[in-house]
Image (cartoon, rainbow, N blue to C red; front, side):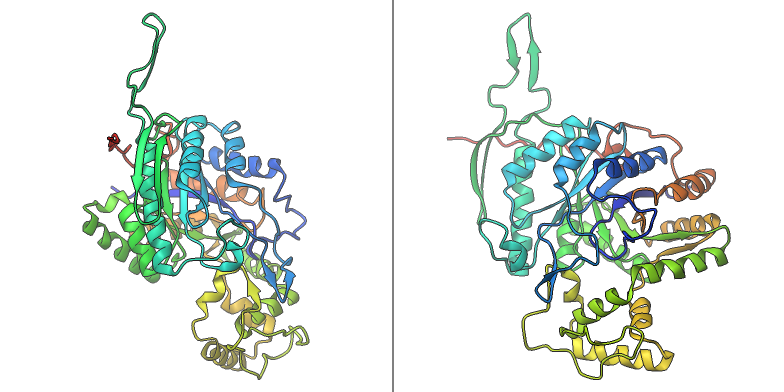
Length: 453
């Protein structure tokens, strides 16, 4: 029997995948845009809607980076509002474990799970930079090992809070005048090297017991954290060989924690461009890439590797002959992707050689090295590609990122989804009310430890 494909949609926001200047693009702030995309995903029977977070406006060269979408509303506010205008779609949001507190976050997710009837999902991330930390009380940042240590303890503390109310604690028996079956409901205590909290949790156990936990880190520590604690991992490995290697690696790690391979789903981010034919889709994809990488964007992305002001360079001209500056604070702030350039000088030389060999301008080279288009083709070609990658264990499904918001998912929903349904690899109806039902994940039993003393 073929594997069932899981699909989610990402409201993309702050990166150059989104073509905000396209005449078809709408607001990334107005609620109507969130509603439109979520309701399209629900109409297509997707597993969940995914919302990232942005905790500080990015800067480059001391200025706000405004070539991409700037600004992002609060995650819980948006997801709570979407709970009222959707019925089955999972509602998943990114919440940082570096700057927040377990009690506050657990209370918000437990509340969202109640409000949505069991559709909440939490993408647990850590933050790596002091620049973002300046917005928060403690400021600063943590070393990578401490970030994941805090994240693991944060999640453990949240678990204690989620489980502090046993199932059936609220009886509300009017005849007997008894509201609670257990007077210890909500009592908790959690102490470790990061947290020392005790008291009463205010929210009864939610429909899913706990929200679905996603994790998005790709480092060794991030993969280990996901294997130990997550229900799904949001990866960037959407190509066949890289996907299979990542998939095998994280599934292998599960045994260390006494978990089965089906207890962690692998869901890479993926973009798509559709056309009437494969050739038509290829032409559309080329147009979209030039929309995503304007001349200004090409120079700014090049500056992120060179770590220099390159505003005097012509985006239609050759790459700089000078090497990247590796001696000072980075020109781009609040952008995690700059960490991918482990050896900027070596990468710059590789890019120069690539540009010279292909006779590529700065803009053409940046388009080539920053390619973000995963699936390009007719609906049947894209359906074939998605099904193949899932069946060959490169993924369990995909979190799709439309380049136009909020209407960019419509074509996929109307053309690719029916083809996947025809071949029996994607649902035609929801089979349960909760996000765990959609993902085939069990509801976790409460592991309640009533504090003593």
